[in-house]
Image (cartoon, rainbow, N blue to C red; front, side, top):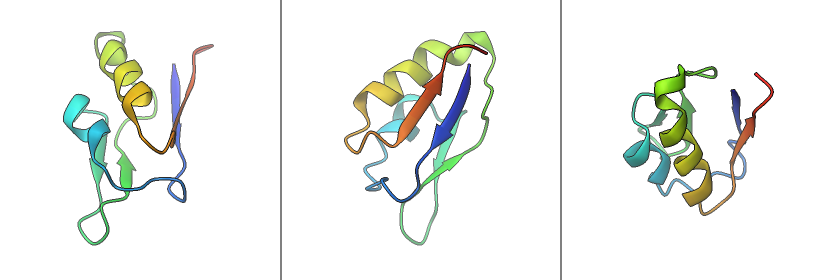
Length: 66
């Protein structure tokens, strides 16, 4: 799995950080998503899927081929 984030779409809700804090963080100045691990280990994948599904701005894209 490979993750990409669209910082322009991000509304800074922070749902991704609450669900998958090992993969996502937020910038202090504006709350925009920061991707910590673009290719997380398998153990974190369920949380990443949930984070993508709860993102209100649909700013998280998952490439499941990896």
